[in-house]
Image (tube, rainbow, N blue to C red; front, top):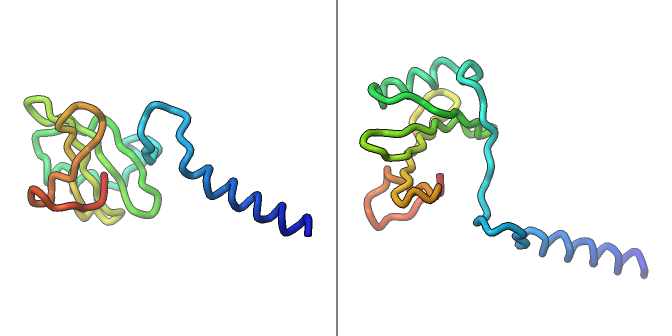
Length: 116
């Protein structure tokens, strides 16, 4: 009986710990930054083709999904562009309020999509 109660207690604690947020920041998924050399050439070429006048400030790895490029587009728009592992453009996010909350700018206004 003690094993059952302990198992339930662990399950409940694990379940509710997902909703705990000790910081003042909203829950965000952190993707590791990577060097430009770690990004496949096909992905960097896809970025250069889509944004020929812009340069990547930081690259992020999204595990099996692909890569994100953080860049600033004139006049001072902070953007994230997501590409698949094979260089296919997935979506673009823009930080309109300069609060590090990027909105999907590839969807029509009023639509919802996956967060960047």
